[in-house]
Length: 359
Image 1 (cartoon, rainbow, N blue to C red):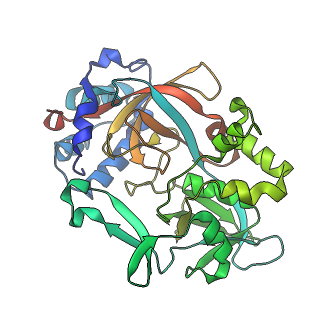
Image 2: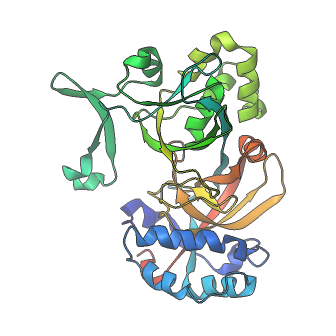
């Protein structure tokens, strides 16, 4: 388990299992495969803070038994309410998914939007090597003469086109779909011959993510309740000549790598496949990657409770703050419809071994 920076312990409050709404009703056995994946990821990042003991104890558990799985978590872990810096217990829960795009290995009529690999001139500088207090703080840039300067923004990358020293992995048919592929961080592309290519996040240009939905609301182009993925797509279809300018409001740009195609979920930041409706993306400065989290929120555009055990297995450029989660809905159109509408209020409890209890 990666070391936890100081802000983490200051955002936790001891809780009891009775504090978790719907804990006894959730099918916790459905989260067991995701938990075992977390154990795999934790093993690859070090086994401190009690996680090695917990994962060893999981081996004889009957993962199909709700009662046995629930008993395991209650015996080996303790719940802690996650609080934001101002003491608030509620935060934002959004959704994401693995999209399906149409593309080609070669640029052709109808397939003209490039999916870029990591540029050769992109520098990643680990500041903690010089300033230990800046652990996990990295900046990205490029050399200009003998100076390191910020890397190109989205608009500059698009303008440079083929002059960008980066491999073009594929060409897809839709600029909006490509933008949302970058927001989601992974996806699949169906080729003209029916073959499937899987893409995963490889790196990013170092610029902060800016919401284009928020920009449309501020301009009066969309109402707040319309600023979903579906609403943005509809706006783009109606305003093709203004699309590039809108996309460039977000200076962030994501680069991809091709990974082997498989039936499992995409790889998250923990390095293990995500599980539909049982994995979340978090801010790792507040929630350790791999940890189980009990999430209490509601379904998209609904007051219907969505209370369940999930695993913190991913991160995201827009996922910042202690009480903040991105709920992974899975692959395809239906998952995308759920993810695109999800903007709910929620609470979170992280489950930790007693050995890693905050001081």
